[in-house]
Length: 561
Ligand SMILES: [Zn+2]
Image 1 (cartoon, rainbow, N blue to C red):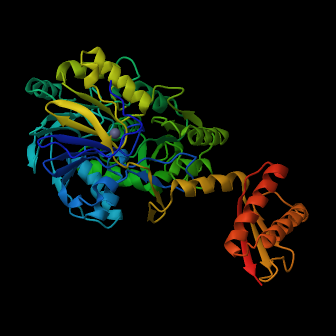
Image 2 (image 1 turned 90 degrees about the vertical axis):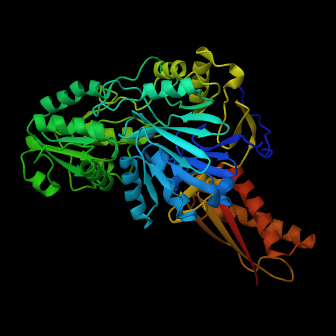
Image 3 (image 1 turned 180 degrees about the vertical axis):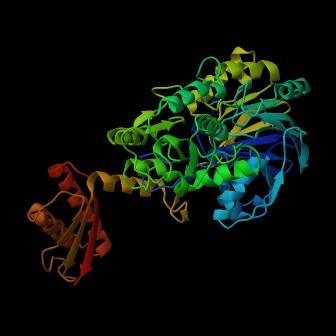
């Protein structure tokens, strides 16, 4: 396997006829997937998603890929291809289109419908091009062919990219469910045909590469869902991803079978299920779905609610129900079904919600105590099948943290791909396909770009460090009036603190320290307020650390009187 060298610099110019592949997100992390392909002076983007922040990134709404590398060449972008409609593949589109409105957005019917609904909220009308499996279409020097793949959202596509440099196959997110609800399986015959033609570079989903065997079928969840509907004594409240159309279809079928009515709760759930129904991806028996007002008039045994918030998101319906901050009051005898994954990093939030619901008397059924979730990603067995069918010359694992990428690389090697043709890259690492050989050629910027309220990129790693420091130590402001001539305090300094535990006498002991610092500065001829502030900052930091074992944010303000 070839690893990125830690001291990689900017890549040399791309050799003529070569293809450059630059992952700007999704490699070394789960989320914000975005890959840029460069050939003959033109660019093609595959996916543009967001990453959700962790608890150590307070105040961040979402995290975007870094567009720096393409920002001054956006006019060269032929299209952005969306493999499917998940947030970690489409969530960055509004921010990309803000930088150039008319980039053609290419995707399947459902993917485009989801992205258009999202863009409407940003008041952007995209230039869309709808494609489907089997379609072959050129975008500048990129000749694209779309292949059906099965995933945890309908209408997913892999994309084959033909250029003069060779044939690339990018799976997007996929698995190989042989019995999907829509009977649209991953098209291995197309994978085989492309393999016969000769796949020069295979980019494949690493998310579940560590999981042995095969991902079980979505249909295997039916018994556990059925059990919930058969035994629930009162209302049933189901939480799932607002994009998991087939999971929700199974819940609708069970509700219908047991004579219950259903209402959708939560903005994204109502919106997406409306889209999926209108486009024929969700089959709703007549009269099954009613609005919330009509549902509430029914006896509890007839009620099913389907809502958002399966990841414990504080503003989503489920967390608000758990906090008694929602018109639906979960109580004794209610059953809550979390028909969803537990995304790493969200555990604390999810268990908080489960505990609160349990405390109100609900029976919470989740993947920890019932078979109510299957993954949307191919396990090791499926990945190995794909390698053996495609027989690629070069492999580049995508979509995953380092452990996932490495496990996927090892699978490729086990199937006979030469180790020096398996390229392990991370965000920003440049991979060039030249003369049929893929290799790492450099590195471009690919930092985390934070969306914080209305600002993009305004919050930096430094501001997050400040927020973490504030959370740990609070802050202290010191206002010191000094005599412009002598440099001495004209009156005792004022202290203002938040989050730093203090009382009336806390700051008494630091006043003489500040006086000494100012006296010493005067002796040395230091009188600039900014310089004095730095000296006070250092002295007060040391005082807080030594006496209180805390590192608050300290903001000294020196005013010349
Ligand atoms: Zn996905």
